[in-house]
Length: 73
Image (cartoon, rainbow, N blue to C red; front, side, top):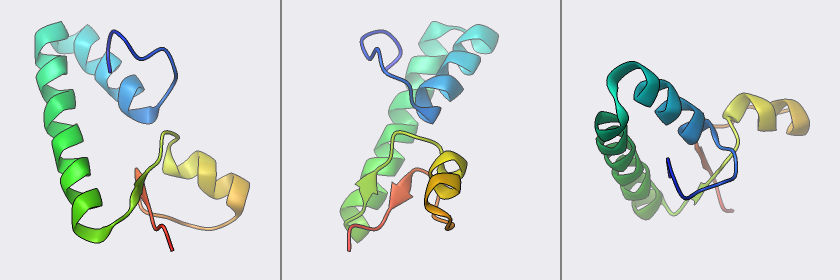
């Protein structure tokens, strides 16, 4: 996510801030832990991962949704 992924996501922006402040290795661990929590939540309730921040998509769609996760129904 930090080195190979060339696109933008709120998770990548967050991890780059951590890498700048605390170092690349700690940022990698933080991203891995965050992704595992997100994947567990996706597995648990069947939702999809959203690459954009919730505020950006909410403004486009005109509604409020949970951060990083969206319902598939």
